[in-house]
Length: 180
Ligand SMILES: C[S@@+](CC[C@H](N)C(=O)[O-])C[C@H]1O[C@@H](n2cnc3c(N)ncnc32)[C@H](O)[C@@H]1O
Image (cartoon, rainbow, N blue to C red; front, side, top):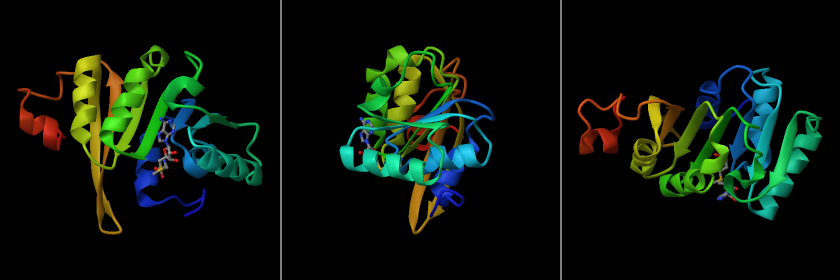
């Protein structure tokens, strides 16, 4: 994998990022996704957030090596605390457990007001994200499931809206397996 050719998992995450939407990738080990989005011309600016110093340094090195320091801002910090309110229009969080992703969103609620889309790829417990969406006014607008290297991945896309819309009726099965 490099920033011209991502893994199928991250390429699918990238496919849900709206054209031109300033995007923050949280938990951005190596900054592969932000670099890819800028190089493909999907976005003109992106933010890579990382809480652990090692991956943060890797992300910085990658962005420097690609000559993208003007368009990809690499920041060290926990979850959405690396963002100013209104700065990102799209947030991607991939490769973590669903409960951790939900807790990052929950602790960063003050940064979500102007965010138009969340693209989330939980390794486990997608139900934690579906439940968080319902409790916080986010509508699940799309989902994708894919297999890569013998592993199954789910990608959930949320926008601010009516959280009940995809669940008619709301039931445990919908929350567990996804309405799409
Ligand atoms: C398994 S890696 C996934 C990297 C990349 N997003 C991907 O999908 O390939 C998870 C990354 O998230 C980072 N991370 C975990 N919790 C975080 C938090 N609260 N804020 C920012 N980064 C976090 C970890 O340090 C790690 O680099």
